[in-house]
Length: 245
Image (cartoon, rainbow, N blue to C red; front, side, top):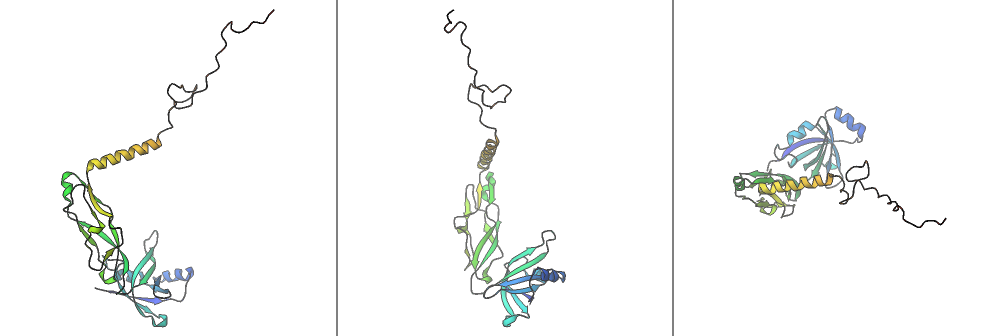
C-alpha cells in the first residue's frame, strides 16, 4: 500500500484572531486527534490536497511529520477526518486529522459503482441505484478505492443487497445486510406509484368537504358553505283561537 507524506507545523497560538493571521500567510489551522491530547498544527492547503489520493481522497493514509512537535511526537500516521471549506470560494479553511494504527480497524465511506447493463432493462425495466456509498470497517491498508457491483444478470423485479457485495478479505460492511444496493422495477409499477402520490398530494390540497346532500348554500355563499337555518313558517291564516269580543 502506498502511503502519502505531508509535513505540518505545531502551533502554540490558538483563537480566531490567530487563525485569521495564519490564513493570511497561505496556511490553515488543523488538529490531530486520537491517542492522547489533540495536537494543533498548521498546514499548507495546497500540499494537503496534493497528498490525497485522487481516487481515495480522505481515505488516503498519510505519514504526517510535525515540525516543532512537543514530547518528541514528530511523525505519526493519520487520515483526514474532516475538512471545512469557504462557503463561497470553496477554498480549505480548516482540517481535522485522526491518528490510525495499521493493525487496527478504522471506519471509512467508500463509493459503490455499478458495472454492466442489467438484463431487466431489455424488458423496459428501470434500474435504481439505491445507495451510492457504503460505510465499512477494516485496517487502513485494506480500504478499497471503490466497490464495484456487477448488475448484468439482474432481472426485472430483482435486487442486490449489501449481503451480496464482494468485499475484500478483512473488510466488513457496517450497513444492514438486507439493505438494497440496486434494483430493477417495472415501469408500470413506477407509473402507479407516481399516480398514487399525485392523487394524495391533490387530495391534501383540495378544499373542504361539500355540504350535506340537499342542503342549499346560504344566500350569497359559496358551494361548500354551511346552509343558513330555515326561517320559521308563519302560522296558517285563520288558525288559532279568536279573542272574544
